[in-house]
Structures are given as structure tokens and as C-alpha cells.
Image (cartoon, rainbow, N blue to C red):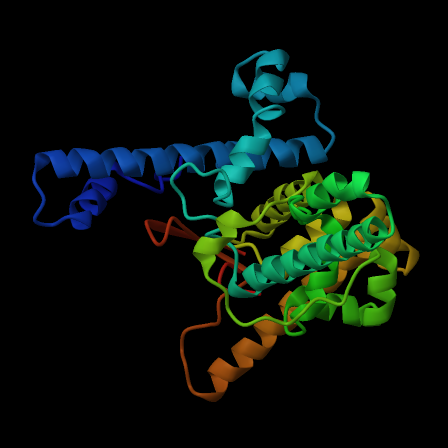
Length: 316
């Protein structure tokens, strides 16, 4: 059997580096925090392989037997609980992690661009309501006030899809372009757009954004794709695959233009491969001996331990 990748001695040494001058109580506190992170990683690890087993056609009875539990126990753990595990992994559950800490800068800007689209649609609806109310009787004034104070629309999959094009250097926009789609076609298919191109945004403000069920499903599916690819970040490419693989009106709109989920997967993979090839060429040209990172050089929890897989540093 291969040596366990995270020996206890390594974990003890890591905890001691967090507060080198700390006393026993600080060590206990740090050790507890690290153990929580390891628990979360173990959930994600098992969930990843359970997802792979399900995708290969294995039944819950077979998966439960492999885990030494019943079919019902396996389903109870991974069907209802999968959402909380995945949301926790992208830092969106409010359990002590920075909101969306795994999202790249481009992906964060896409979220805020999508929020602008949602706000614009809310403002347009409010303006229409005010115009109608102006021509109505005084009895309608209460409804007008309610329209003015209505909460802004949450971000949905359509807003995200249109916002991909606000980041032309992101892999999502590149894949869409390689599919031969024009921005006007995309906006027409999803029913909204264009989105503004924004500078870097304050990550702390992400927690103020609201998302509907389609956006939340997109995030869960995006994380699954990041794990399958061996990436420890969420980029625009994962969000694009998330939007398309959850199905629904937005995915159908893209499919009508010829961009099916399967085709998008191929285009994203090709873009990643091309990026790695260019990076390797650049490193070779300056005489670097170290090879460029392959897609999926996985780093867990900010360098606690590393394991080469397939391109974690390709941040799009």
C-alpha cells in the first residue's frame, strides 16, 4: 500500500508553524481549525469518487457496499448532503470561509457583471410600474410604492451566461467564440445582455449578492467540473460548463445555437491544452528547467499539502 499522503508528523509540524510563539491553547485552537479543514476535504474526496461511480452507471447499492454501509445510508449521506458539501467547498455557505474564495478574479467579475444585469432588469421593471401607476388612480399609489421598494432580482443562470462575454480573455468567452457564436446571438438566446466589463471587485461584497436556484445549481455543477479536471479553483470555464450541464432554458438556448454541453466540454479542454502548450513554450524560451504546470496540479488548503493531478494554476 502506498504511503499515506499526509503523515501525522507533517500535520503536527504544520499546526506549530501557524503560531510559532503560541502556547498550548493556541496550538489546540489551530489543530481544531486544521482538523475541520481536513474533515471538509475528506467529504469532498469521497463525494468526488461517489459522483464518478454514479456517472459510470454503478448503483447506490454497489456504492454503499463499497463503503460498508447500506444503500439507504449512502443515499442519505450524498444525495441530500451533497449540496451543503459543494457549497461549503466554494465558500458560499457562510461557515467561516471567505465567500467564493475559490473563484478566480475573472469569475468574481462575472458575478458582479451578472448582478448589474439583474439590477438593470429590476430597474426596468420598476420604471414600467411607475409609468403605469402615473396614469392610474390614486388608489394605485400604494402598489407603486411597493414596486419601488421591491427587492432586486437575484442573479440567475441567464445573467451569468450573458456576463461571460464581459470577460473576453476568460476561457468561457473564448469557448463561446470558438463555437462561432456572436455576442448578439448569445444575448438573444438567453434573453438578456450585454453585461458591463468591470474592474476587480471587492471579494467581501460577494456575500451581498443573491442567487436564484438556477445560479446555485450552476455553482454546484461548476465545482463538480473543477474537481473532475483536478482544479482547486472555480474559473469562468467551470461556470460555463455548469450553466450548460444543469439544463434548462439557458442551456437549451445555447444548444439551439449549436453549443451543446458536450461541445463546450471539448472546447474548454482544447483551450486549456492550448494554454498549457503556450506556457510551456514561454518557459522553454527563457531557459527554465521546471516544466509548466499540467492542468490540475492540485493544492489543497493553500499549500497544506500538494498532489500533482491535472492544472490548478490555470486561473480563468
